[in-house]
Length: 55
Image (tube, rainbow, N blue to C red; front, side):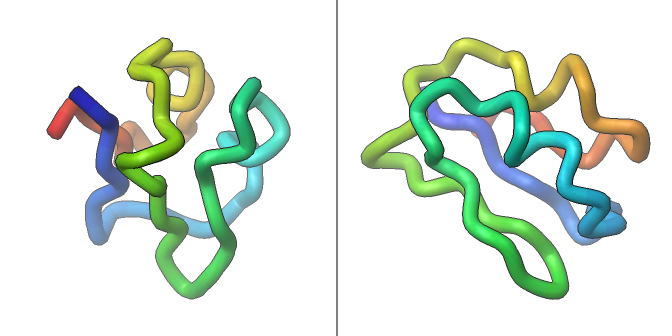
């Protein structure tokens, strides 16, 4: 199950730096590619706005 990023995202970039498989892309609100995400949860652990949750 991939993670998703909610509208609470502040686009700080913290999750991109931590993702080991580069599944996160930049934008006004970042997005996680469900086909690449390995469900490790690292991004959710580092998100300062708690915007990342399991799908």
